[in-house]
Length: 226
Image (cartoon, rainbow, N blue to C red; front, side, top):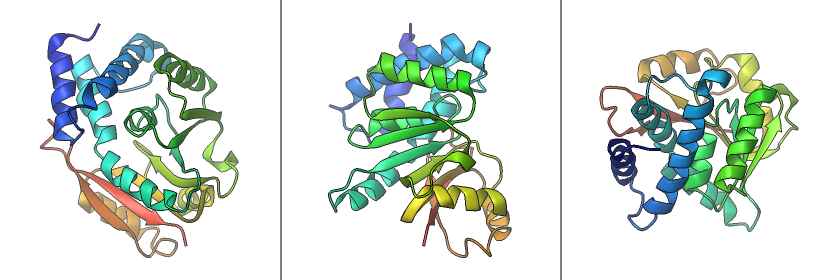
């Protein structure tokens, strides 16, 4: 069970990320259920790097949710035309950031793309246990995803972008779709993006604030597919 201190940590983090007070109990309950599944299966499936529950909450759950407002805004803009919005988590692993975002944004459909079948089984089990009807799991490598599948594709803890990988990722999203990459230090981002400038000449960097991680730089890199 989630301890009182961890429960308070999660609640305080959600408040800091500007979730509405009336929304927090339902969101927190599902996140706590997800955390229990991560704790239960982490050793067997190597899902997250964390030594304890509080580290999972701060380094993984709140970090994943730090971009939720940006993603909500982009999805709502694209939903204005009346079409269903598909948001992908590419290389989902243990479901980060996809499952926390799907909990926070139930009005949008999420596709968790993961190449390892045992992790896909974990993700499908989580979606069922948590009642996440807006989540679908695809057991695929990024290269196998059908072209122009998603409106927005996000990814976290991904290896540095190179020309081959950025081409693969851009292929998965629709024209005018958005890649949203969780990244760390600004200096490292600029060096990384300089290496793919011939493919991605323009991009936007949004600062992210992760509650209780004030000493760690986090940013969201947004790349629009033209």
